[in-house]
Length: 137
Image (tube, rainbow, N blue to C red):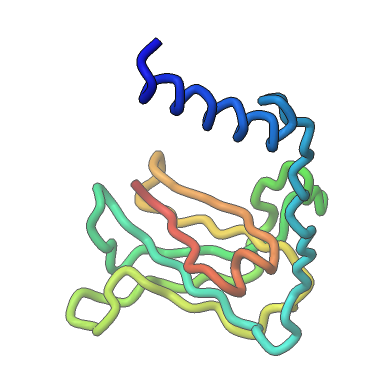
């Protein structure tokens, strides 16, 4: 065996020996568990309504709590209120904000485009407090 190849094998063997012979039984450290809690100071949710990727101005959006308070598989319940998305000339067409929400509640929103076309989403407080809820396609 040529001397340079032998040196490479010798170095590789030394590294493997230092690392436990090439087998590793190291266990990765698990990531810390993070538990989010609702922020009692955030009481508003912003809803964005789109249609075919464009803002949808003038669309009614209803808010409710989940049907039968089922937060495991929420579906919109009886509407508590309804608002219309901002019109086209507004700075934020297709957006609407619901205020006075209870920070610990799950809410559902339904944007009704027509008698046969609507989009809905339910979200817990960690979602609606920190993200814009998007309804549409």
